[in-house]
Image (cartoon, rainbow, N blue to C red; front, side, top):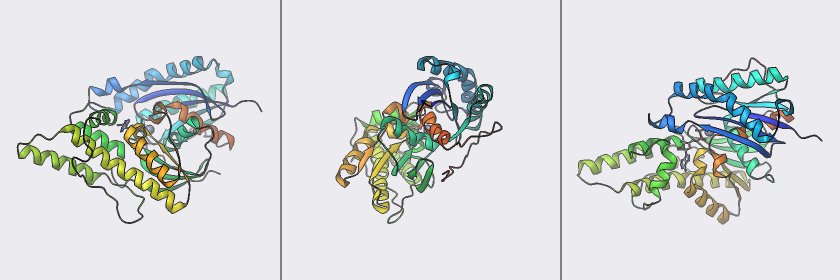
Length: 341
Ligand code: KG4
Ligand code: ZN
């Protein structure tokens, strides 16, 4: 059978990315134009600035992805694009570009949900991995436990009731005076602290709950800092960062292990920007080993937003001929279709 080459485009937040993936598992190229330096000045992503940057970079990253892969447009079989969820102005740029390429090249447009793209990073990192497995997707916009019954067939076991884990990292990092993006900066600060220094609350939300909540933890950290300030004490910021990180990681790992126990599924995976966190990866590995579970996670550069994971997810849409129409719109709160089979 001839190889299938998918060109992926990602522009849902602050990375403009294009990639070429062969047969859903080999990354021929993965170009990411990061906007971090630009948004850092503002302490977070400014949506209008992000859209403008995507517009300036999108054709450049596509050309570079093809060049790096040693391919021409004629070699591409389908264009996969993140349709949502994400920042609408940012998504619009990727979707408009993808539609134009698909139209001009007369090849299918493959609609990808951002969550399925993150999950797919695991197929790129582990070519032997096959569903069913449970994936914890933890990013700036999501904290979801998903049972991947098969490719394109998902059961949502639980999600956050309020903040996403990455959002909580970013908010606490900002309070601690750390630069954007907060997650990696907080992890670095925490590496010099004691995770047992402050016992911050964990929101278990009842026995066997697979839902998450991080707003109480966030308030508790803020109150702790305020109380110390009022009483004229200067708490150790590395200790606060490490204790906060410990509280988040503890809940994420325990609930994923619980999901495996409740469903009887013996494989678990991690995905999304927060899964780049080393403390999370280590605790996960340790607990999965104790439970006798197989544990998968992508290399760090595939955890944060990139187009290779979009192209990989798009490949499975290609296989079942799930093609989007050329009037496909970007969608800020695009729902995950749980069964496309
Ligand atoms: O998946 P992603 O690149 O974009 C979204 O889809 O949101 O995830 C970005 C999120 C941000 O909240 C960022 O602070 C967090 O992932 N993040 C981390 C780490 N690296 C990125 N959080 C904790 N520790 C890290 N090392
Ligand atoms: Zn993401």
